[in-house]
Length: 327
Length: 308
Image (cartoon, rainbow over all chains, first blue to last red):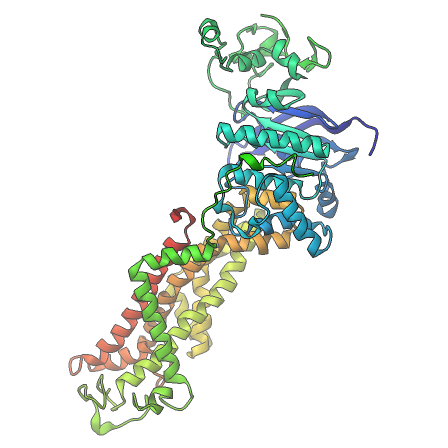
């Protein structure tokens, strides 16, 4: 283990999907993201649908090649890795997927699904592997005798547990959870989140936890990054972001969380944003939030100059807004 | 160490009765009566065809058991005989027993229909898999070639190939394979393109699966259902094309009695004795219908959306 407290560093990551046909252009799914994830922490990443969260997850896990920028994992630049070098990185980095019904091969038994990573990385003898599969099932709270069952025989929550067991199979140090609970019922969500927390304690895991629901992320994260239209607009410690949001988009997101107290809820005036999230093919000039921003000065600096991520508010808090912390 | 972590107490352990995927499909297939009837007819047809060819003496097992006559034995004095105990379906212009000829013809038609599918699977499957998996210019090249092949009328292209190779069992076999792989290639490519986007493929890549293993263990098994259905529907198409070619006189050579050859022979005397056309025609129709019903049943049984 290196002493570097930063496990994963994303520097200026871009992912543009070219639009085929005449006219060209590109969907700028991820458009210049800087991000750091520290060893042992959980970084929550939130944003609306279509803001590029899942694309960023696939850049970090090298499932998609970045258009530009650098992703450094555990001191190694993984952006251009291929073949066995990349596979070696994946022993340390795993992913839990969003849709528990699409992330398990319907033609494979649970045992085969969980054994596949062990086979691929040639971990242990055949007997060790079979024992490890049962251990994994027990670890995620499933019956270890379910190895010859097929995924369609399980409920959504059980399938997600299988997905978690698969990610744990190779003993990774870092797991990307791409909306790992979004597709589940609320009661099941709580179970899965508790399971993830227990596993983190047990194995000193580092999580990147992606969600579009701030309430879920708050429970789990040490720090939270907010994404809007391909860019990170604010990053801060969990309590700082909830108590002193600096970016107007963060404020709007937070005010959309319902308060479980009818008296407070009636008095509350949630900030409602104007319009729709703009197209990532043609993002707005300057600050890309300015057409929907309640405090933007248009025409003026907001529509002309792109605000950089700068320290605002609490220690360790950065926001990309010309008028951070105001109104 | 697991005890502290697993949430065993809260998990519901109830999992439905175990059913494998194929067992599950069989249950749904059985519910379709027409498909089951078709399967029974096909199995019967295969047994009858095998008995007509094995052992290799003319007429095979059925002749040995005195159930039928020899398919090649001519008796010109007894041509166009009406059905009797001796000749249950009558005789043709040369006095040959029609029933034994139809059973012998079944072996030719079924062999062509079924064996051609393996050639189609080999050509179409690998071209479609390569196009879908690699994408980019490989996909473009292979699919434009497929489009060109697709643009020719099927029968015309088969005629060209058979004319080039000379008429024989093997040239029909190869010509059918070279023409009918196109549809399967497109199907497999589409399957692979959609499966490639599935999260379980990403998950397999994440867990270090090599490209070859990815194809063999994930892409092939998951595209198998529609492929089996298409190949099943391909069997009657191949049988029909063979019959059409033989009817046109460039297929199976007489005296080998394929159904198409028999219809052509009988066509000359259709007004004198329509049975010459009707019986082999019924054999062709029954076989095609059976395979079509089985294909329908398989399509419903192998479609995961039909699972309750």
